[in-house]
Amino acid sequence: MYKNIIDKLPYSKPFLFVDEILQIDINGVEGTFTFDANLDFYKGHFKENPVTPGVILTEVMAQIGVVCLGIYLLGNDFNSESKVALTSSEIEYLKPVYPNEKVTVISEKIYFRFGKLKCNVKMFNAINEEVCQGTIAGMIV
Image (cartoon, rainbow, N blue to C red; front, side, top):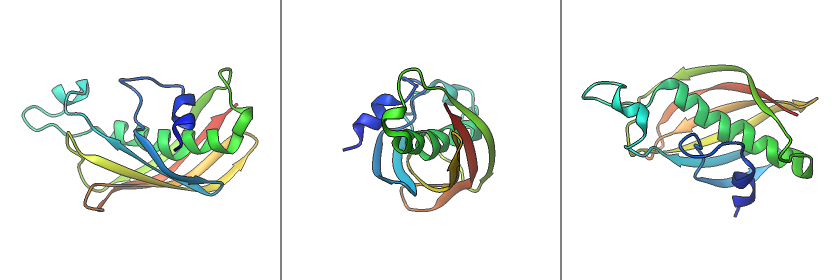
């Protein structure tokens, strides 16, 4: 339903961390991603017990919770010339995320002005446990 937003993301595999957008409006977004067990970072994080690195969890939350929402909010003003940059993040990690887990990200806009979008973002696992949460801000110009 929202494939047009995903198609506008400035990422490609293996660094595209959005499978689907479930809901989006001017106040927030909800989307999902499933961590394929064959992703390269699992080979060394950690030996014999792979878990998803926190920096990747943050990236998933940023792509769904800030960039997808920013593209939606900008509408036709977002194009192939647009640039996206993370400006700040403060994330608390509560539970590990393992290979083959599907996560859901829910983002609520705090503000969007002068090209800067700041959101409260939460990630949940398949059994609806909160795995991380925090605030993420980025610039879209």
